[in-house]
Image (cartoon, each protein chain N blue to C red):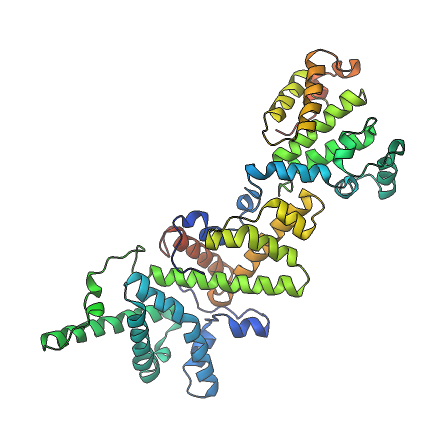
Length: 192
Length: 259
């Protein structure tokens, strides 16, 4: 290994003496250009593996939910593109995304967690007719537009979000959801 | 501030104690003895410090490698062995590596004077040594090259220990992720191993798992680094101060700058 210092030691050697710093620990773990790969990995990850970390659902319950409609749900992709996804799994996915987004170690890149968060809400809305968020249509649309601005999301996810956005902006969100009170929405504490 | 004073030797494996630049004063004191154990301790000290001393001559003083080797050899023979320099190291007066570097610089200055005297007497001057005084300081300070080399050695030891631990505890993923994503890019400017390659090589089931391994590996390296520094720095506060110093040195500052 070299003895000479590299041109920009601040970005190289020095970082090795500062790895335990809380910010450096999680900052830039996976850079922007790799978020597409991380997102693809997230969507192909076993639902049961990630959701078992949540408090509440037992392994048996998760397994039962993943066997919904006789179509075994293995991955988040399977869930988000299932014709009749179990609403309970979508809610768990939303909780998982929210928890990882807010995790002090930022276990999953925040943008990826946020995309999973909005995706679960959109799928619940468009395919189950259920609103699993307290966000107003306006705030939800803002979030979806933010997600659509990510250059690294895949086409199926982009289409699904676009469909959801169209439903919201066309005013076809579920009636119950539209009647959400501002106070309920404000309690959502959306990750941003 | 005393850097290598008073700290109790931390418990580590025999392997790690044998192989790292252990610079505790107990070792320095042993190296001052003339028995077999003293000679072994002296050999350990020299083996660990010579790369940093040589870097000081080559990088700071811009002496060519062969001449630097000659000077180091002369320093070892005349000062360390014949005059038993190590016996004069005083724990109360600061870092051992500063003591060693100061002694080397004095030796080199003596060589310069000798060379100039020889030149005046009509003998062939030694250009390398003769020009030492006018040499610029490419890395910013009189002992910076030495400190950088020392920092490099500390990193290398932390790396060696972490790799060993990862492999012996069946965690090649920790080592692989750290080496591919953090260590090689930092030390060699290598491109980080791609995320997709990591998940393929190590079979991570989700980004959460991959990220956990990444974070755990960084923490493991930080722990090993701290252990390495702690073995010569002393107590927790001294260890913190030394790590901050090494960070500053490598970042371009000087040891002891700042708080």
